[in-house]
Image 1: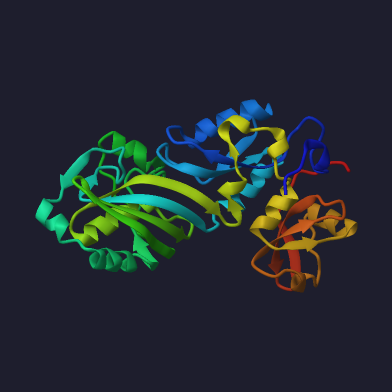
Image 2 (image 1 turned 45 degrees about the vertical axis):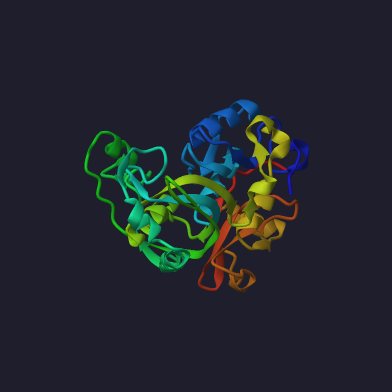
Length: 310
């Protein structure tokens, strides 16, 4: 799965290219992780797919060198999170880093039993309409919502359709400050777990916010395969072809077809070779040519990796 610098035929000498999985610790931003990776790998060209808030931990997928082109195909994959939701208080950020704006009284909180929690969770499972948190990274008139919110501006975000395919309660703990719910969530890209916590609390009439969040999966990329922040190195890179195969079906192409795709030509009549919406075209040397899609009966590249001499 992982390739050493010399084993990746698409990596020119001295220029790392590939996908790096990182287990982000809490208390730092995703950009901080990118900065650390740039120093560890001695390269500037690194980006990430799917921001994690400073409070959150877990899987961050980095693209290095030309493999940054793959990130757009990673960010849209389904994700899995483990989380702790606290019922009984609302915050202005929908998580524990914000200021408490409202608390439920003890009698109302005591009326929330396991049955009510299960019903609330069920109502937020499946296709749902969700209004993102006002401190999300969504852009409003060209600016991030969280920047506007921190300046005191009124932020109104539009509801979006998302899918929560699993919202499983693992444990319920009752204490003087509220009710803590440990859960695991499988969801589509664009789902905000903070908004789930907010909406669960609102539906139960007691308020709610997030106190812990860990991302464990993006598509088939798993945090179990991720490196710790202090262990980042070129040796931990997954080559571009192997990474692309984790996100979409592989289509093997011969040398002539690889050349045509790289030059923007279609592979006439080859559409039946692709199972799915898009695929990873891999040449005979194991190099990722690019991402291909069907165009009628043909295949055409929609993203090409930088050409490297064999």
